[in-house]
Length: 126
Image 1: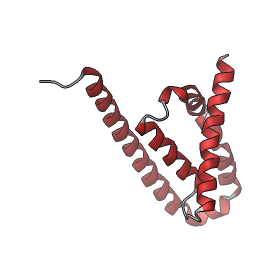
Image 2: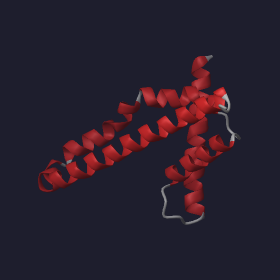
Image 3: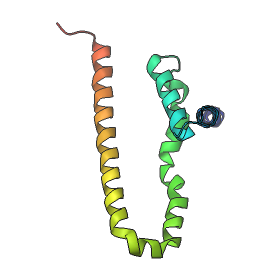
Image 4: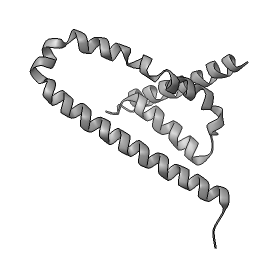
């Protein structure tokens, strides 16, 4: 039963991805469809239309196997060795800065979300 629930939730996540791609193509937006799909899902989660429990197992599956999804990127990096010799130091700086921004923004967002949920849970303090 757990496997079926995960498959259904992953299917829902993939539908948001496909919906985002369709919206980007239909509206001729210069934004990747995956980003639009994530924004749509975020807005639905934020508004309460979609409950986070609906996708918790499927998203957990993706998070547990996150490194597996970067294997094609790693293989491509090996193939492009000469490119890295020429531009490697610039790429390292870009990767370091973007990773740092990602870590900091994720940490701040998670901290705010946890504080917000705790505040909602305990009610107003007088």
